[in-house]
Figure 1: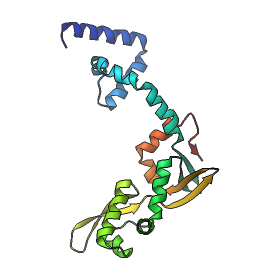
Figure 2: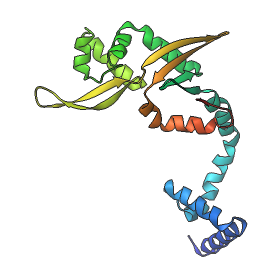
Figure 3: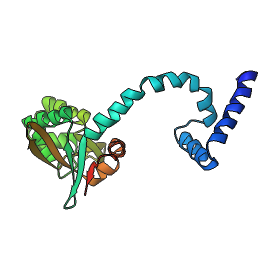
Figure 4: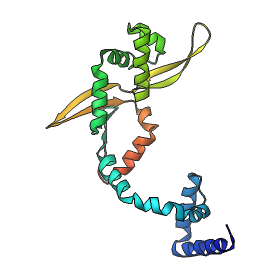
Length: 209
């Protein structure tokens, strides 16, 4: 910063501290630090970020109000965690995946146990070429996730995979079709996106006990 910027910067900080009580100011600083941002840096770059922040304010509000709050409903019943998918895109993706016989066979096999790709393909009686392609699609789409490592007979380490969907139900509500899936509790607990959706949906109850 040049001389005038230093002077203005200090004055701005003083003005902000005057308008915001010390505890709130400290909380803001702590929150910014978690994002790797210093409060002083925020002031320095305010001119750069002000326009895009205000430019997309309405769009971001719409995303939160319309998309996030209407995306899914989380329910806990008899020790199981269920996600009712309200997203048409995700519902269609789930239905198409389970309509594929080979993919369904893989997901059914990996539902109760973690396994390597080669053993899964052998157990499901799938050829390597198409089997690996389908497996890669399931991994890329998030239906199958890594679940640790195992040592093979050759002494090498291989990745274990498992299906995140334990059970699936199709819900027909008037003209709407939703997929309802049972997901392990640890998968939900480690999901930053689910946490974001829950926080965004607090004005409308998104979690049902």
